[in-house]
Length: 394
Image 1 (spheres, rainbow, N blue to C red):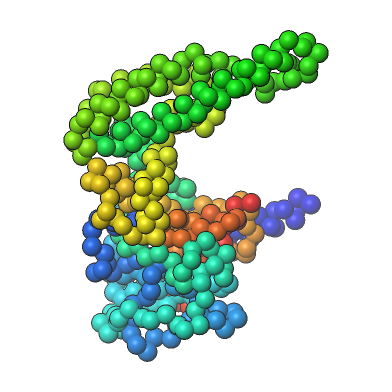
Image 2 (image 1 turned 90 degrees about the vertical axis):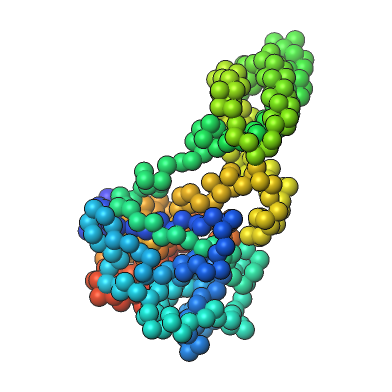
């Protein structure tokens, strides 16, 4: 049995793969900058000469275009001086996916005659392959290939989490007011639930024979809601005052960091006594809740549209969220998969695209996809025979 497991694990190919490789993070360009002239992008349609032959899948249907990368934009990795294996410093790399995948390399001469191609008439929706998108293409996002030396981390250290601390992303009064309202709503709901739960808890306390009295979950909830009932009203009142202050200021004006620290200290005192319910994370400061609130106000964002309609105060937050590390990389080291067993021996990753709502590359049970080619062929610039891996989440 152990030999069988060892053989299965060896299929990942990690044994003879380098421990560090040059990679290019595919960072989204700011949504508030014109992207029509971008030379690298994910989603949308490819740019190629009129005689370009659109690749087909194993069933003969057209593959879906996923990315186009300007090879001239791939700067050498500073420590090693390396560029992508076997590729010219000019031209473009085009990637297509479906049940299978295809990579195509266009020369600089071909790109000089390139134009955006019409979609094949028989190209189906991306839903054919389980993605949640509605259209026949993934949403287009211009990208800026940014070089780094990759050690196979889920988040390379060179791209720190911009949303780790509220002080980093609550940058103006408009975001402060929106975030405060989210926490007020969350704590108000929790306070109402505390009233209902504690009333029920008191009703069963009178019956010593009730087994619920000794249930550990009930004891934890009793402690949690007791804290909420005692301390949440004070925090809610302070947050309401903070929100009124924020709304009285110019919404795009930089936040008073000292005042923000003071309200966060009050919140964290409550947070530290709470059980790990969702409201606990809201009290600490949860950027995803702010993003969801912005999306509710501006639903066109889910379709890659409407950025010009955003209030000025929301734009730094949205820009920060979209232009940071989102898990899309070219070459480098894809972290090992926990639930996939494809045979990747002798192969390296060409491109990895995360499940991303901004691209509509999400699916039900996957956290991304990647394309792999044989290392020896990549060294010769031969990328025509690749293997698609859909990253299983379960």
